[in-house]
Image (cartoon, rainbow, N blue to C red; front, side, top):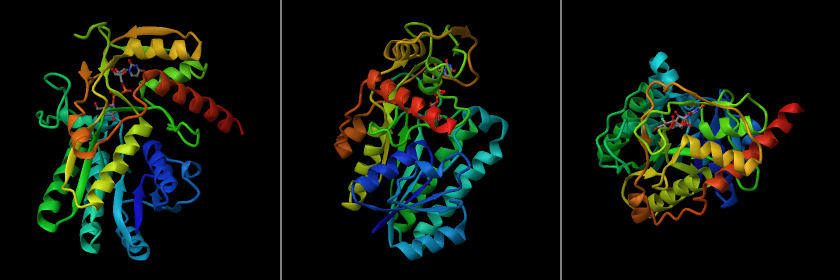
Length: 329
Ligand code: UFG
């Protein structure tokens, strides 16, 4: 039995590949390296450079490697970019997922774990947000992911494929063993940007909006350590293999931190000060998005081990520093 991981050279995908190879799984990675890196992929995995929407390639890999599960990370993830270039998002996130699902069904790959997003909720009426909350994505990004959730549900009903769609909240941090981390160029993510500012890799940061209806006026998010997130994927895969039914579940801790709290944590943990400017709101940002993690805890017995903002920031800082050294060579 082998696991096919798409996007295994990316931020979350590369952590998943390490997790799976650490557990002794046979892993095949497909990544087109448009945003991922081959050096981020665990050497025990078989790496094939290619596109997850390439039906010929994926069909051949499924045939050659006795794949029983696909863990699908590959996709585009910038909300703003999805507004200006929606068709790229529907191609990369929706159409390519459709191809993969079809190939899985045709070849009898039984299990599919999909990387979904809290963006399917849009602006929640209240928080913590449960999976039964209204689904009102506000961007092509969110819609492109929700369409894939729907395709999975329909394919599961019609063809018996079993799946888990995991809705990520704000993923941050890096592998505690320092083997991979968030290496994405031109990141938009707060924790990474703050770490770059703390290490002098950028001139401070701008807080996008300080007039929200939140305790300190800045946006509140549920930051989840990438190690706990990939453990949730592994738990989901184990449950599917054990015959459990389909699952759509939030991945977050159920508590929020404001932008200013994150910035203060990065300053304290790094011991470095940096310039912070209060700026206007970023288009499309909800005030507060915090998960209710009850379902995933109940269904999978998921137990987070890194629910601590200081530890998330420590690991992100360590990775950012290692990345500077790597990029200098
Ligand atoms: N922020 C700043 N300054 C920055 C960057 C971010 O103030 O330079 C703020 C944002 O306004 C927001 C918070 O920090 O309040 C977190 O922003 P991120 O860009 O790190 O993350 P988002 O919450 O915007 O996005 C995340 C995922 C998306 C997903 C979305 C769903 O990265 O993929 O959650 O809610 F779509």
